[in-house]
Image (cartoon, rainbow, N blue to C red; front, side, top):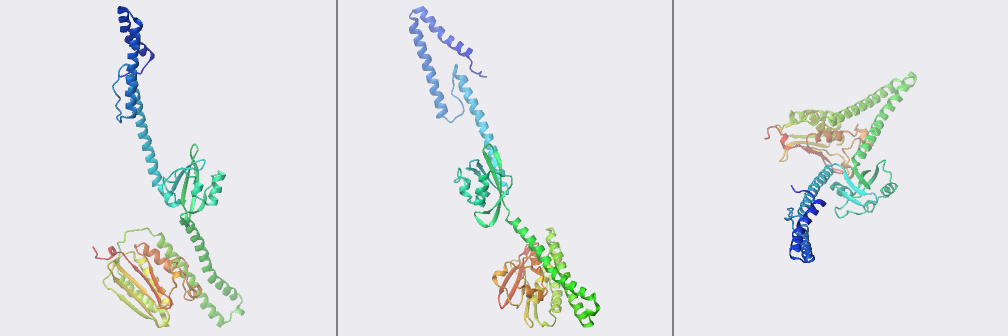
Length: 434
């Protein structure tokens, strides 16, 4: 093991080096010339070892130090040990940086690290996607030059980051971003960016949902309250008026009952866990019953029904949810089809899977309304929907029931000609399909 260099070792080395030259000077005389020659040899030897060290540090890529002797051996080995230690530390630091970046890339939020003066140090890939940053091109750029939202610029200049801020996404005006800035290291901050568009949308849907429910229940309750107040005075409620009031109150109670039942059905379907669809549902038998119910619901409208059903096409499904989806489509066709018009229902197999199509001969739907039909309480014509007893929840129930079967509702409509509502179940749900 090589010991570290000390002044004692240097003194002994010089003493052993000069002692023979002093002896030769004493024997042959000319002591000064012998000491000068020894000093020149010592200088040349040190100069040679300096060149070896320079070549090792700047030219050679090997960590192994060159061979040395005397006082240079501890120096070579000491530098070698420092290089080994620094390489180990660099490897540990690189591992930590990789772990940090891997963890930052796997996070569901965008991350940006910037200095106190605002210059960007690093950002993850999600920040590049959400904020439109380009890495490493934007390294060192002031963050307020890339995020030019006035609210963010004021927020950054105030240096008060106790509360988050919301801004419009620079890459998509329809999205809302929540920005939260926290101290990271000395002179640096980390900004966490989260897309809260869906949360905002759900909050808006919740407010609209309660407003719509309140509005839908207010009308029948007002009617019932008015008639009940009239019944308190027998003279104000003669027999003919009582018969009419009884009919209206019964209709309004049925309307409220239907609304509550649909709300319960929708809540039940939404809250249902995603389970394996292993129950065999005999769809042809279900459609046979629905055909009779549709004819009964049609009443005196004399509508013409065409049910084209493959008698042996059964599926694995949740029977209650699938019945809710199909019945809502069939009942909607009956409600929105004029008298003496045709309604067609087809259940058949395709290359993609079993398909149901319900075609009516109603007024049709304008294109701007089609993408919103599955929203709760959305109606194309509110006055007409109330006349037919619609609540605006039927297609929302269909949408959520089909989503549990990996299917989507397809809507095609032509104004003045009618509409077609259809869906295709996955082929793997066909009974007997391998």
